[in-house]
Length: 375
Image (cartoon, rainbow, N blue to C red; front, side, top):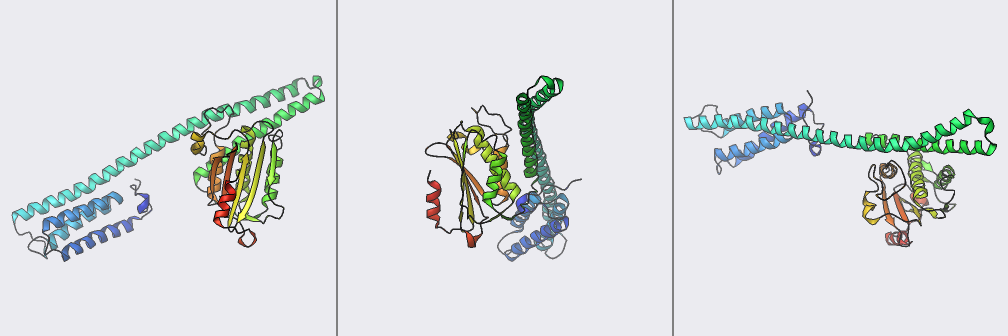
């Protein structure tokens, strides 16, 4: 039988031993306080206070420690508060009835509170299962479409190459091979996004930080995105002498890759896409912006959600790219914000505690705010 649910704010991993100890200490402490004021309050008031304490204990601990506490509170009430005191004899029939009722109420209270918690736990599990099923269906519907297109392109191109290679000119063969390469990269991107999302969902991402050259990272990513960015104008605004930054190269490479690829998808031909970086004390700020159409203001708050795609977008996708970006940035204890540029286009601003203090450019916070707000 699984242990009963314990709310996270109390510590869901409290052992049974500590549950017994804490519940007994709680009842003894409350009883001691009541005993100090026993000259001013009657035994009935003490009973209500002990029952309230038992109810609170039952909200957080397993059934066995709660039942033990219920029996202990009944014995304490009898020994210290019912006349005659300091023994377990009950003076009259009325007190016998009170003690019996207290004992029954304490046990019933403990059992009912535990049952309510169990029902709430089952309800939460059902809700989580329904949410998981919904996400699964969303993912399946999305990926079934996203995988079908590149797979069909690969099959069609390979069939043409295999069936009648003699009839194909050199230029046609190169074109078909290019289609296979592009489709393969698209498939690989979807698989990478799925793997990255599974890593985020598992909660086991631990950034392996080391010192890296942000300029070399950006150059490598632009080389990888040479095909998608062919009809765009990528700009790099990072000084040649920019200091090394301490971060997880693989995670941040995926972050910038997704942002630049996203910009290439959603901007018209001829648009410029700029990536810049600045160091402020211990803060690394990376900005990826473009002069495209930007994002609808009413949807900006939702673009980092899993599987979310813009309502009027004609571009495909699984809706995982930006949620992965946010997850990887937060794994660095950083933040990412999206705004529309006043003159048009989107701006992603990443802030990471990754810059080497001795080699960064310290600026007052008001200058940082002013600089980042300039289009």
